[in-house]
Length: 403
Image (tube, rainbow, N blue to C red; front, side, top):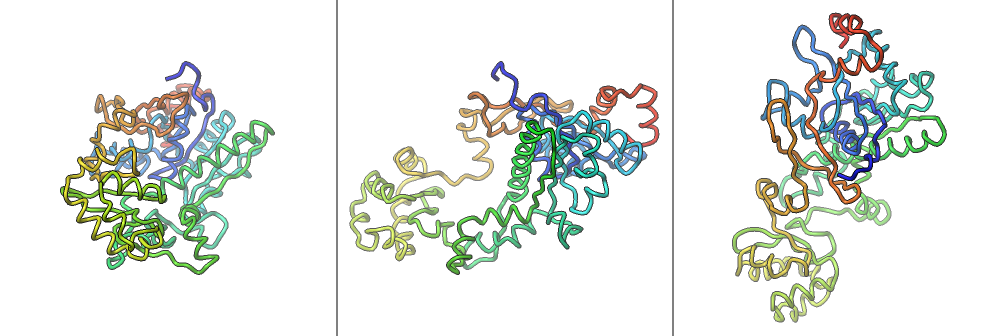
């Protein structure tokens, strides 16, 4: 890594978070150098406690320490704290005095109840930024509704856009609305943080899963709102207008070929040596190819099925936008990930050399450094000491179940 400090070094962010969306967003901040203190419920009578993600199976490093949790919590610190107690609120307020931002992904009605709004904290630290991520927002009749990614994919139209035209509606294979919303929260938090550094005043930042999901409908939304054009599902996951931009069958597997521009169709035909297909009047222009997409699919399947995927990749890659269609195992074992540094290892107390994904962000040409996500409450003692609590006071807080 570069000898310079990471961009967010010196910034302290408190995050009251669990599961996926919020932790995903704050992990980006932690990887960029911010000190992200993850506040988690303490165990009661030796049971429960912590981010619910710690208990998400099927793979665990130890009981209640899951691989799932590691995917969202690299580079963070963990403080156990019961915010429902006056003592817990007192610890929070001491933390807020030293912090630059407070993030949460609580249900919409809870931040006010838990005292993590700007209104509740501004007298303690006028520059504090309070970022909120909820399912449906904090200012409407759905504020109390619980909500998850899959519901947003359904309501925002994703499921009806995904899958085969004659099949059932399908969600995406990953919780992309969670990931997008967490990233959007991080962007909003950083924007408010820049302003707070200039003005000395913090503010509220809000985003929610449904709003983020709807926003990502992007150009099909504008097509419908302005022209009444409802984008539907297409065969072979094809682009709605550019053709061919879809999956094709090779001899031993699937490929995705994307002739988004007319020039790529010409290059594809030239590289494949198929003047006969290029000269077919049904496929002369993109409009012709779109009108005759079913026939073009059959022709391309016949052509591509003559050779395996590896043959076509060697012939086309770098000339035409093209990719093999991998299973997750093939995608993770792709040597290219090692070449570009997208696989990393960290040392966890239960497993040295734990495999993790690297940050997609580079700083000064280098991937960001990673360390394992914290054990539950791993940093509680150190943080209390940093806040000026004596050993006796910290022991009393632990005995009372506050930390």
